[in-house]
Length: 254
Image 1 (cartoon, rainbow, N blue to C red):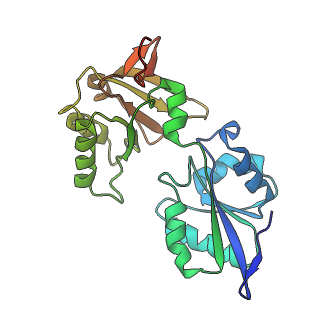
Image 2 (image 1 turned 60 degrees about the horizontal axis):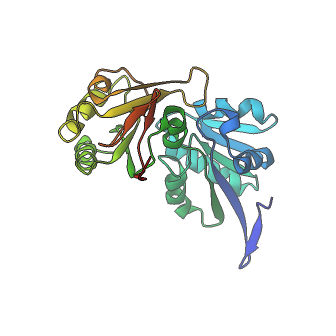
């Protein structure tokens, strides 16, 4: 694996931005594991670094807490400039609410460093496999976190997706400061979706304590969730089959 190369007289370095999947090592892609195995430094949010430490002994691990994402990116570029093989890790997929975009933005100040994005299993697909088959037709992802997105914009997206009868997958559905956001989201979706719409939740996807529940939208409104829960709201065709959440693709004669 080459990490230093030369273009036009400049010696360039490289950072891999790696999605490690939902949490379990078995759900990490082969390429992601290979990159982490061959790098010198693994950088990430403290919780995510703790998930991979035991599988990659002997590496240098660097972390920053929540809300220090920009500092984390700068740290990665500075380490790469030293000639080290650097991996920036994210949970799920680095390109889905992950660090890929911010790394490209920060990378404008480091033209000598190349980026390669290594995809991973995001919570939507990881959770869908636990629930059954909820994402077989058109769907969208919406984060309920308003740290970086105004609630008014989130509200508009919830209403638009509900009116268009999308299956909706919600990331970051609740936190200590946002304990009622899922309830607010359900109230908005109920303007266009039936109270009996089949929904599901999956918590701790691919980690210890993984569990799922299938319920109606009415029941979902009063369900307690946390930041480790991914929420699925079906479309008008979604149904429950043998305790699983299934959205038909539309095949005839089934």
